[in-house]
Image (cartoon, rainbow, N blue to C red):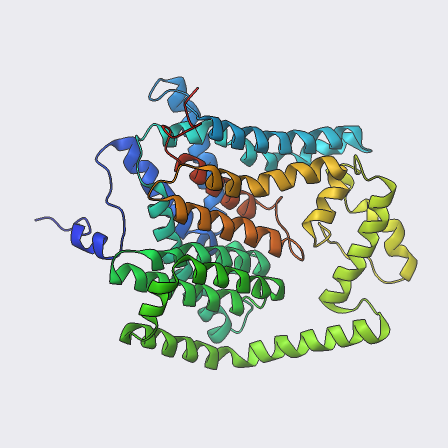
Length: 426
C-alpha cells in the first residue's frame, strides 16, 4: 500500500504550483527554488546553508561533467557585477589601515561569487519554471512567518524574530515574502489568487508584529506595486467569502497584538519628540541620527576609498566621542549607503548600487515572454525593499540578507530565456 502520495496535479493547478519535472536536475532545481522562497523568515540561516550547498554541489557537478558551464550575456553581467562588488570590498580593505584584520571580514563575500556556478546548474534544466516555484514558496513562507510571529508576540510576549534570530531581518524577509508571494494574485486560478491575497495579509501582519518601524513604512511601496501588478484580479477577489474570512483573521491578529503595536507607536512618538525638541540622541531613532552624523563626518575625510570594511565603525569613534554619550557596539551605521561609503567610499557604493539594481535591469531588458511582467515586478519588489529598508537597517553583510538577495538575482537571470535577443550563450 502506498502511504505517501504526490500532491495531485489538479491541486497544483488550482494553486498555480508548478508540477515537478521528471528530469533529476530540473526537479532538484525547482524544489531548491521553492525552499529558498519558503524558508527565509521561518528558518533563517538555513537558506545560507542551502545556497552554499548548491554552490559546492554545482562546482562538483561541473567538474564531473554532469552539465557544462553555460551562461548568457545577461547571466555574466550579473555575475561580474557581484564579483566587482566583492573585489572592491577586498581591495579597499587591503589598502586601509589594519589590513591584517581584513581577511576575517571577507567570508561573507563568498555568496556574491555563487552566480558563476549556480546559474549554469539552473540553465542545465532546460527551461524549468523556477520563478513560479519560488513565488509559490514565498507565499507559503509568508504565511509561516505570520504564524511564527503571532505565537512569539501574542503567546510568549517576545518581539518576533522567527528563524532569523534578528527582529529587523525577520521583518525585512517578511516584507520581501509578502511582495513575492503576493504576486500569486496574478494567477489564472481562483485558488491561486486567494493564496496570493492571503500571502499579502499574512506577510503584512508578520512584518507589523516584528515591530520594525522602517520596514513597516517600506511596506507601503510594496503594496502599491502589488496593486499596480494585478488591479483587476485584486478588485475581483476583495468581496469573496474567503477574502472576508482572511480580513476577519487579520482583525483577530490585530486584536491580540494591539497593546504591542500601541506601545511601539507611543515609543516612536516619544523618541521623535525628544529628538526634535532637545536634539538628544536617546532611543533607537536618536542613536541612528547620531550614527549618521558621525558617518558623514568620517566620509568627508575619505570619500573615494573609505576606510576598509575592518575599520568602518572605528572611523566613527572620534565624532561619537564629542557628545559624551556612550559609544554602543553597533556593527553598521544603520544606513547602507553610509555604511558602504565607510567601507570603500564611492567605489564600493557604486558597485553596491549596481548589485542592487541588476535584477531590475535584467528583468526590464528581458524578452517579452509570458513571465516578463511577473519577473519585472518581482525584481522591483525585492530591490526596492532592500533599498528602502537599507536607509535605516542593514542591507548586505548579513548571511540571510546576502543569501536571499543573491539567490533571488540568480533566479531572475536564470528565468530569462537563453534564446531571446541578446541572450545567446557563450
